[in-house]
Length: 160
Image 1: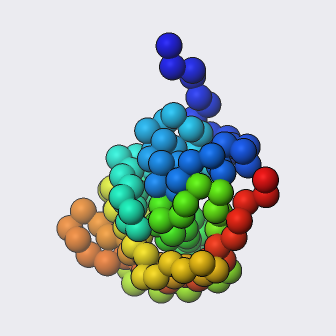
Image 2: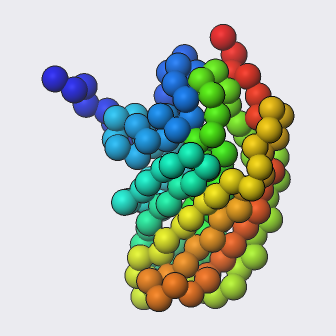
């Protein structure tokens, strides 16, 4: 019998260090490991991961609105930062971790609850021993670019 995993939570450093980044991301997407609590805000679905590449789908709603009546930029930031970071993570060997050092976002089109499902795709540009770079794009169901970003991540050994 497979143990039930809470949908959202934080895994222990030992669990994180015990598997490759790609295995970790795939297990998280499959519900075998919890998704980080921040993802409860954007509720991603139909997520896929390959080496250096992740795709998340999400649907912006009224609960994501800012005071001026559109989806807050933080919604896009969560999706883009997550997609880029997970793309980097998917390339790491067991015992390695990462953290975002910086990222830049460009907002192209606004989102609303009428936007429907948006697709966030993250791809690595380069991952080395100490740093990884990646890019991500959010598109709507017509393939129009809504936002894009780049990041630099610090790669490090996880505590043993």
